[in-house]
Amino acid sequence: MSEQTKVTVSNGGFGSKLGFILAAAGSAVGLGNIWRFPYLAAQYGGGIFLLVYLILTVTFGFSLMVTEIAIGRKTGKSVIGAYSEVNKHFAPLGWLAAAVPVIILPYYCVIGGWVLKYMTAFLTGQGKTAAGDGSFFSEFIGHAAQPTIFFFIFVILTAIVVMLGVNKGIERMSKIMMPVLFILIIGIGIYTLTLPGAIDGLIYYVKPDFTKFSIKTVIAAMGQLFYSMSLAMGIMITYGSYMRKEDHLEGSVRNIEIFDTAVAFLAGLIIVPSVFVFSGGDASALKSGPSLMFITLPNVFDSMIGGQIVGAAFFILVALAALTSSISLMETVVSIIVEKFHIKRIPACLIVMGISLAMGMLSVLGYSDWSEVTVFGYQFLDFFDFVSNNIMMPIVALLTCILIGFVAKTKFVEDEVEENGEFKSKTLYRVMVRYVCPICMLVILFSALFMKL
Ligand code: PHE
Image (cartoon, rainbow, N blue to C red; front, side, top):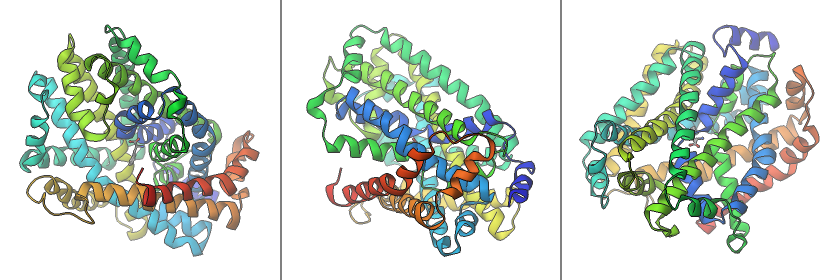
């Protein structure tokens, strides 16, 4: 088995530990970090949410990520092949996990296209028109032509990187994009903190508000974390299959966690104080989802000195974050096609690109020409998002924990982690995978289905 892994890696896997870490962090750092984390932190008690999130990252998130990367590296296979190699009765789980990126990739790229539109607007000095009562946004997504063009551009950019391969495409681009992203987020963060009144916003963001603490805080943090670390969609298995045997797995996961959490925290440091300043201290201005990113923030930038530049930098940052995530989604699907159907990388990319363009059009049209069409009361994009995030992903993670915790046994993962060094958190890992993570997954699943959190 290890022979096979070596072959896969030498055939174009990640060439360095840093390359792997940056690519995996690139997947983890995405729209979730920037538009969802800050809002959740503000909504669920500031510092107390941050603390809960941090504790969950180093325990729950850590264990799930170690599991996936170890499965990938040990088997050296794509997500479908990997699950059936761990245990052939779990092959259907591989298919279920593989379906998640197929569903997410198209709509993620539609949103990526929206980000490109705003980036272009700010870069061409038209940020002012993007501000206002939200009509710019509703006009934009309400007519299919422009969203389609930007969506296509985003898919094509993603496909170009994936076509270039793991080493020459994904790794090389991650090594450029991730440092740029980090510099941008720190730069914008410092600038927004110097705005008058920003410190009150900062305090609001980091100060624990125990009155807002409840079990919901924990559930919200758990759901966010799980999405933010790109778990349960085969991505970490795929990237793990390209990881070098000689690199330390546990240490790499710790680095990815730090990167992902730092970017989420810094995004909050930009968004919460700047919205606070803009709204004159009214925390309710901090909304969730698209309206924060595409309506509130353009107004916030418009009100700042140098807002045009800050806005452009911000949307470049978001575009980079979204692109490295969509690359990981596409790679996961491409790796399956290459392995299962023996098709070469470039034609496999073209196939995935074609499927994504077709499926994504449903989401584009769902906001424009077909806006009256709904699926179980959801627009297409929201429906895909709900099914993948709230139903399929918790099921995949739950069954993965059962597979490793009780069927294959945790030794399967432990041996892989110990290939090159000690597994420092082994006891924690065992308890998490066998007992805590499955319970957490059930809680996420039930709360999504019945509590409408
Ligand atoms: N981890 C990404 C984020 O925080 C989400 C994501 C990545 C979704 C990859 C899908 C695929 O936004």
